[in-house]
Length: 115
Length: 111
Image (cartoon, each protein chain N blue to C red):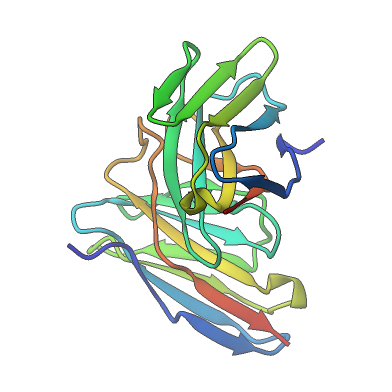
């Protein structure tokens, strides 16, 4: 079975541009979360979506937005890119809104470099 | 103060050693607790959940002290394959899963 898939795997942008990252959850999983991992730090929660609705938002500026589609895939959009947005963006899926075991299944991430 | 703080590491140990990682969390309303493992340039994966009664999975033992807001992970008989970054993780929310990760502690096991 396919795990969580993300695209693109790597990308380079310049300051001020925008970027769209895509994620397909594990088949049957209805919740998708996005995390940002800056080098040397742990992942930081950005958004959680469940059944196409935003169910949680981390401490990120409004330049960050996301959505979930009827097939449960998701997009993360970042506008007006800053150098500090350079990071690994991880998508994670789970069956339900809350995961009792704490297990989120992460994709391999999209590595964004902003020049 | 960071919400989840861990020993910075790195921990460099020989095969067969026992190593312990510590973690503290700042919010007493935290709901659930976990250790994730992240290999170099890979995604994090759940290692084990952490319960107040303590729990063990093979060579790995996790402990939680809610009163002290302290979490630990003990690895016995370290293997080369244990080399990775270990992330202490807390979930704040009763509904939903918004994991709060520590910075991680890097373990390097050598032969």
